[in-house]
Length: 331
Image (spheres, rainbow, N blue to C red):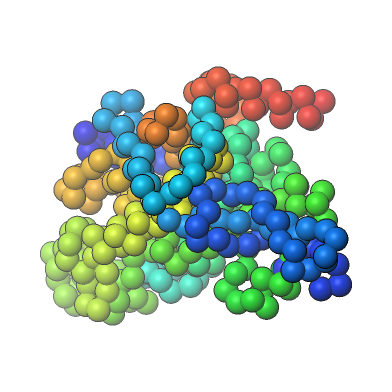
């Protein structure tokens, strides 16, 4: 099963009422809510986010129940989940351990992100999640710039009340033509501790090839003062369950642009891989993977091959219909 999975992965803002992106820990989906703290005769709309888990071959991951929720979200027949590992970074190019150091993409990485966007340009996207690191955010933005729907990705700023107020959107029409981008440190790359910034080959020469291999490829052994893959998976999968699954349940189509280890962790959860299987899972930079969330299950569809291949969009009837809708908008 590990070999099969690896193959898939490798093709792998007071004067007037305003609309704003907001954050609600009790919500179960992206939706607009009203607030009357601005104008007494009108309502302020804000985009609110949730707080609170495959393959046709592998036993599907079942949607976890939420006994604390007193309401039932309206379920869509299916939702798309797109996973993209960021394009090549400057430290990837230099063969340095990057981890949670915030470095940008190389020109090659920019091109990889653009190509990834072309591969998913006919697949619906309602909300985007990225890590707090610039390389993942660049990848998400560049990819969405290729989408035929031409909606503008806008990073949601809720780190402070001022950031929230200053980033409000005042036009309902503009809001309709935008896609919220949620950044989360929980989706960051695995923290490599004292290895960050070191050359990988020189580190192997210094500590020994076997020791460095153990730090890099074991599931539960962390590098000095760093995270193991198991520790990375704990935060990434928890965030996925608490924040992203409610969006899918509500019928939202989600894209996640993140990192090799945080995405491996999510794929491990979706495909029910063992700790031994996930350590051999390799994800190529800039290659999107597609899952379909339907009836509480995740069905892995591999990687969209490219915008020119009609078969890619015949994965499901709903995706085919969405592409037909886009074709009609262009005409």
